[in-house]
Length: 310
Image (cartoon, rainbow, N blue to C red; front, side, top):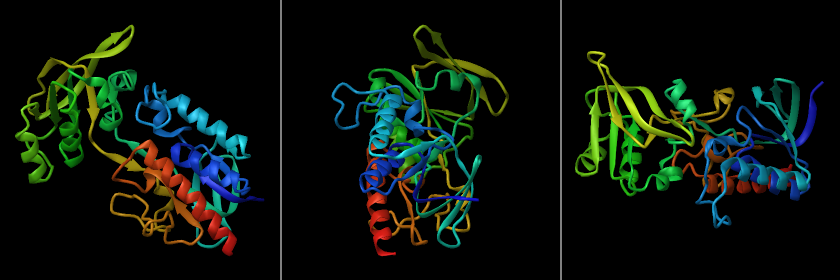
């Protein structure tokens, strides 16, 4: 038999935990399912310096631990599990987890988005130590250094352009011999003296040192003849996009072509009354911890008002 809760929150990143703080303070007794990556993407960010309130910065895992403790202080309950199936056809909404079934009157989806990675061992080894998927989060740490951005679309060019504020040189590595980005973005990159291009190459290996862990160079492999070359590099940024963690809601909630959940107006309401979306699962523009936290607050307030009216 399914266990019922008034409010269930899926995801425990900045959006999920902020929603939990607000919902718990409203005495809605929220239950948070932590998901596939407890704490969200911030847990792979070594230093967070742009989150208000932390003058000297804080590590991503520390920040998310604090948020969780704060939510628990007000009565939110965290469960280490993830939703694998959802039936949103009627209220109460039914969720199937790895460890059982649950129902709820209001559902806040804060499952985030997953950065697309190359999935090579050296990438995982240096993740957070020279390898990143967020230029706005980590660009500052590469002041006066040489870095690379992998990708050829608008997001890669955008990241590369942003990173020229800090780096002495940014190399765009793209597997094809021409970019996929819009003409305006391409022109912008080509006119930037700090940006160079490595066309028809993929990363074969990221090289570095262990004590302390940091990237020193990258080995590139030609997509045309298989030849390799090594170039000195202090950091690698993945600009190959994100995938929103929304697949279990396909066909039930309105989404855009990339799978981001569509919210209505200046709210977190989805097309199904009683279901709200916050954070990177619905935000394909800002993708920051602070904006995710803000939308988590909105989702809890929206859920509270919904529950008062039913």
